[in-house]
Image (cartoon, rainbow, N blue to C red; front, side, top):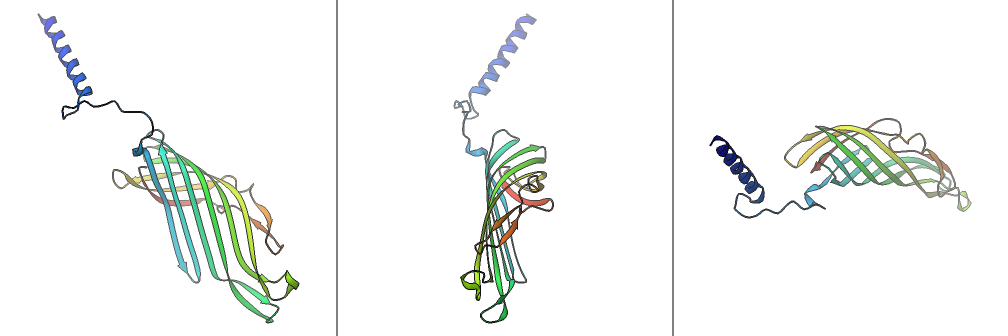
Length: 223
Protein backbone atom coordinates (compact mmCIF):
# COMPACT_ATOMS: atom_id res chain seq x y z
CA UNK A 1 0.00 0.00 0.00
CA UNK A 2 2.84 2.37 0.80
CA UNK A 3 4.38 1.69 -2.64
CA UNK A 4 1.07 2.40 -4.38
CA UNK A 5 0.71 5.62 -2.40
CA UNK A 6 4.23 6.76 -3.34
CA UNK A 7 3.66 5.94 -7.01
CA UNK A 8 0.40 7.83 -6.97
CA UNK A 9 2.08 10.88 -5.39
CA UNK A 10 4.84 10.85 -8.03
CA UNK A 11 2.27 10.65 -10.83
CA UNK A 12 0.36 13.55 -9.31
CA UNK A 13 3.52 15.68 -9.11
CA UNK A 14 4.46 14.75 -12.66
CA UNK A 15 1.06 15.67 -14.06
CA UNK A 16 1.08 18.88 -12.04
CA UNK A 17 4.49 19.82 -13.50
CA UNK A 18 3.30 19.05 -17.02
CA UNK A 19 0.25 21.22 -16.45
CA UNK A 20 2.46 24.11 -15.33
CA UNK A 21 4.52 23.84 -18.49
CA UNK A 22 1.64 23.54 -20.93
CA UNK A 23 -0.79 26.00 -19.39
CA UNK A 24 -0.34 29.49 -18.10
CA UNK A 25 -1.99 30.90 -15.01
CA UNK A 26 -4.95 32.11 -17.06
CA UNK A 27 -5.80 28.62 -18.19
CA UNK A 28 -4.76 29.11 -21.82
CA UNK A 29 -2.12 27.09 -23.55
CA UNK A 30 1.31 28.75 -23.80
CA UNK A 31 3.28 28.18 -26.99
CA UNK A 32 6.95 27.17 -26.80
CA UNK A 33 9.26 30.14 -27.21
CA UNK A 34 10.15 30.52 -30.87
CA UNK A 35 13.77 30.76 -31.90
CA UNK A 36 15.01 33.57 -34.13
CA UNK A 37 15.05 37.34 -33.98
CA UNK A 38 13.78 38.77 -30.69
CA UNK A 39 13.19 42.56 -30.54
CA UNK A 40 13.64 42.41 -26.77
CA UNK A 41 17.31 41.58 -27.35
CA UNK A 42 18.03 44.82 -29.21
CA UNK A 43 20.30 47.20 -27.28
CA UNK A 44 20.66 50.93 -27.87
CA UNK A 45 23.17 53.24 -26.29
CA UNK A 46 26.16 55.50 -26.73
CA UNK A 47 27.50 58.79 -25.50
CA UNK A 48 27.52 62.47 -26.33
CA UNK A 49 29.50 65.50 -25.33
CA UNK A 50 29.48 69.20 -26.08
CA UNK A 51 31.82 71.95 -24.93
CA UNK A 52 31.98 75.62 -25.75
CA UNK A 53 34.73 77.77 -24.29
CA UNK A 54 37.14 80.50 -25.38
CA UNK A 55 36.10 80.45 -29.02
CA UNK A 56 36.30 76.64 -29.21
CA UNK A 57 33.29 74.48 -30.13
CA UNK A 58 33.49 70.74 -29.53
CA UNK A 59 30.66 68.30 -30.34
CA UNK A 60 30.87 64.53 -29.94
CA UNK A 61 28.14 61.99 -30.80
CA UNK A 62 28.54 58.21 -30.57
CA UNK A 63 25.27 56.27 -30.98
CA UNK A 64 25.47 52.47 -31.00
CA UNK A 65 22.96 49.72 -31.73
CA UNK A 66 23.41 46.02 -31.09
CA UNK A 67 21.89 42.66 -30.33
CA UNK A 68 22.22 40.21 -27.44
CA UNK A 69 23.49 37.03 -29.08
CA UNK A 70 23.56 35.42 -25.63
CA UNK A 71 22.66 36.96 -22.26
CA UNK A 72 26.30 38.07 -21.84
CA UNK A 73 27.60 38.41 -25.41
CA UNK A 74 26.57 41.45 -27.49
CA UNK A 75 27.54 42.69 -30.95
CA UNK A 76 26.54 45.71 -33.00
CA UNK A 77 27.40 48.77 -35.04
CA UNK A 78 28.26 52.34 -34.09
CA UNK A 79 28.62 55.70 -35.79
CA UNK A 80 30.84 58.30 -34.18
CA UNK A 81 31.04 61.97 -35.13
CA UNK A 82 33.34 64.70 -33.81
CA UNK A 83 33.32 68.36 -34.72
CA UNK A 84 35.87 70.90 -33.55
CA UNK A 85 35.84 74.57 -34.47
CA UNK A 86 38.50 76.96 -33.22
CA UNK A 87 37.39 80.53 -33.86
CA UNK A 88 40.90 81.97 -33.73
CA UNK A 89 42.62 78.89 -35.08
CA UNK A 90 45.19 80.31 -37.46
CA UNK A 91 47.00 83.60 -37.83
CA UNK A 92 47.88 84.06 -41.49
CA UNK A 93 49.88 86.73 -43.28
CA UNK A 94 47.78 88.09 -46.12
CA UNK A 95 50.15 89.14 -48.89
CA UNK A 96 47.42 91.28 -50.47
CA UNK A 97 46.59 93.39 -47.41
CA UNK A 98 50.17 93.04 -46.13
CA UNK A 99 49.06 92.20 -42.59
CA UNK A 100 48.38 89.24 -40.30
CA UNK A 101 44.77 88.08 -40.09
CA UNK A 102 43.05 85.48 -37.88
CA UNK A 103 40.84 82.75 -39.35
CA UNK A 104 38.90 79.79 -37.86
CA UNK A 105 39.69 76.10 -38.34
CA UNK A 106 37.02 73.41 -38.75
CA UNK A 107 37.51 69.67 -38.30
CA UNK A 108 34.97 66.90 -38.96
CA UNK A 109 35.57 63.25 -38.15
CA UNK A 110 33.11 60.47 -39.07
CA UNK A 111 33.78 57.07 -37.49
CA UNK A 112 31.51 54.15 -38.48
CA UNK A 113 32.41 50.86 -36.85
CA UNK A 114 31.61 47.45 -35.39
CA UNK A 115 31.79 46.41 -31.73
CA UNK A 116 31.72 43.33 -29.49
CA UNK A 117 31.08 43.28 -25.74
CA UNK A 118 31.05 40.50 -23.15
CA UNK A 119 29.58 40.96 -19.69
CA UNK A 120 31.15 39.37 -16.63
CA UNK A 121 28.77 40.21 -13.79
CA UNK A 122 28.82 44.04 -13.53
CA UNK A 123 32.03 44.30 -15.56
CA UNK A 124 32.60 43.95 -19.29
CA UNK A 125 35.34 43.59 -21.87
CA UNK A 126 34.94 45.48 -25.13
CA UNK A 127 36.52 45.68 -28.58
CA UNK A 128 35.57 48.11 -31.32
CA UNK A 129 36.82 48.61 -34.87
CA UNK A 130 36.37 52.05 -36.43
CA UNK A 131 37.18 53.47 -39.85
CA UNK A 132 37.73 57.22 -39.60
CA UNK A 133 36.96 59.66 -42.40
CA UNK A 134 38.38 63.09 -41.62
CA UNK A 135 37.81 66.47 -43.26
CA UNK A 136 39.70 69.56 -42.11
CA UNK A 137 39.25 73.12 -43.38
CA UNK A 138 41.28 76.24 -42.70
CA UNK A 139 42.68 79.39 -44.31
CA UNK A 140 46.35 79.77 -45.18
CA UNK A 141 48.55 82.16 -47.11
CA UNK A 142 48.09 81.62 -50.82
CA UNK A 143 50.45 79.12 -52.38
CA UNK A 144 48.37 78.67 -55.53
CA UNK A 145 47.05 81.24 -58.01
CA UNK A 146 50.27 83.22 -58.02
CA UNK A 147 50.74 83.11 -54.26
CA UNK A 148 48.79 86.30 -53.56
CA UNK A 149 46.46 86.89 -50.62
CA UNK A 150 44.99 83.92 -48.73
CA UNK A 151 43.24 80.72 -49.79
CA UNK A 152 40.94 78.10 -48.36
CA UNK A 153 42.62 74.76 -47.69
CA UNK A 154 40.99 71.33 -47.38
CA UNK A 155 42.52 68.12 -46.06
CA UNK A 156 40.85 64.71 -46.46
CA UNK A 157 42.13 61.49 -44.91
CA UNK A 158 41.08 58.02 -43.75
CA UNK A 159 42.57 55.62 -41.21
CA UNK A 160 41.45 52.70 -39.03
CA UNK A 161 41.55 52.10 -35.29
CA UNK A 162 40.96 49.07 -33.09
CA UNK A 163 39.93 49.80 -29.52
CA UNK A 164 40.23 47.19 -26.78
CA UNK A 165 39.36 47.71 -23.15
CA UNK A 166 37.12 47.04 -20.21
CA UNK A 167 34.57 48.79 -18.08
CA UNK A 168 31.90 48.74 -15.40
CA UNK A 169 28.12 48.70 -15.88
CA UNK A 170 25.75 50.30 -13.35
CA UNK A 171 22.05 49.37 -13.72
CA UNK A 172 19.72 52.33 -13.26
CA UNK A 173 16.50 50.39 -13.84
CA UNK A 174 15.40 47.04 -15.25
CA UNK A 175 16.35 48.06 -18.81
CA UNK A 176 18.51 51.18 -18.46
CA UNK A 177 22.12 51.27 -17.34
CA UNK A 178 25.12 53.59 -17.28
CA UNK A 179 28.63 52.45 -18.01
CA UNK A 180 32.19 53.71 -17.82
CA UNK A 181 35.11 52.22 -19.70
CA UNK A 182 38.72 52.73 -20.69
CA UNK A 183 39.90 51.78 -24.19
CA UNK A 184 43.21 51.75 -26.01
CA UNK A 185 43.79 51.90 -29.77
CA UNK A 186 46.20 49.05 -30.51
CA UNK A 187 46.71 50.25 -34.10
CA UNK A 188 47.67 53.84 -33.30
CA UNK A 189 51.42 53.38 -33.84
CA UNK A 190 50.89 51.76 -37.25
CA UNK A 191 48.34 54.12 -38.78
CA UNK A 192 50.23 57.41 -38.73
CA UNK A 193 50.74 58.74 -42.22
CA UNK A 194 51.43 61.84 -44.30
CA UNK A 195 48.77 63.21 -46.64
CA UNK A 196 48.56 66.12 -49.06
CA UNK A 197 46.17 69.04 -48.59
CA UNK A 198 44.46 70.91 -51.41
CA UNK A 199 47.30 73.46 -51.52
CA UNK A 200 49.91 70.75 -52.01
CA UNK A 201 51.38 70.99 -48.52
CA UNK A 202 52.12 67.78 -46.57
CA UNK A 203 50.57 67.07 -43.16
CA UNK A 204 50.85 64.21 -40.68
CA UNK A 205 47.62 62.57 -39.46
CA UNK A 206 47.12 60.00 -36.70
CA UNK A 207 44.44 58.14 -34.76
CA UNK A 208 42.07 60.39 -32.77
CA UNK A 209 42.94 58.15 -29.79
CA UNK A 210 46.71 58.47 -30.20
CA UNK A 211 48.81 59.28 -27.20
CA UNK A 212 47.02 57.46 -24.42
CA UNK A 213 43.97 55.66 -23.05
CA UNK A 214 40.50 56.78 -24.05
CA UNK A 215 37.98 57.04 -21.17
CA UNK A 216 34.31 56.84 -22.07
CA UNK A 217 30.99 57.27 -20.28
CA UNK A 218 27.67 56.25 -21.79
CA UNK A 219 24.11 55.09 -21.23
CA UNK A 220 22.29 52.14 -22.70
CA UNK A 221 18.90 50.46 -22.98
CA UNK A 222 18.96 46.69 -22.85
CA UNK A 223 22.62 46.42 -21.90
